[in-house]
Amino acid sequence: MTILSQENPVILLLENMLEALSTAPDNINNERRRRRYLLNWLESARQMSAFRGMAEEFTTLRKLLATNTDIPVANTLKSLLESGNNAALYDLYRFRSALAACRSLGWQIGTCAW
Image 1 (cartoon, rainbow, N blue to C red):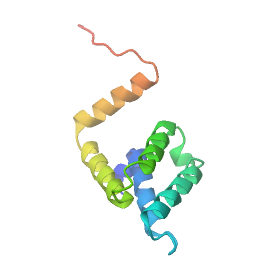
Image 2 (image 1 turned 135 degrees about the horizontal axis):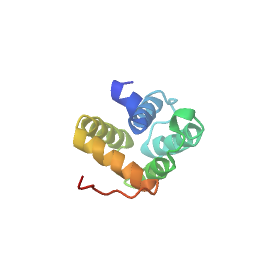
Image 3 (image 1 turned 90 degrees about the vertical axis):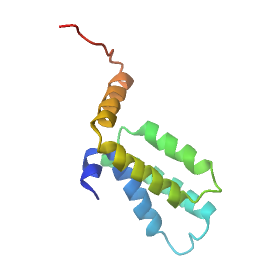
């Protein structure tokens, strides 16, 4: 677990998915089984307190696991994790993420001249 994963639950989720995949039973040895294993893992992860309130992210990850089956899922998760870690290092990305979170809660964003 990185310092960034403590601040960003999506990074923590991706790290845990990769860890689950690396510790999967030996019979999870082809891409179809890996994806099914991760889909089942996501269902149990939804119940964890660290991942509550992330329905949109879980839906996106389930869609991702159902598509692009020609690309190894581990490579996709690693790329997403790397992008998330890189984005978390820059203030602009964190600011945009905060704005998006506010908008998703129904907040109206504007600027004040004073």
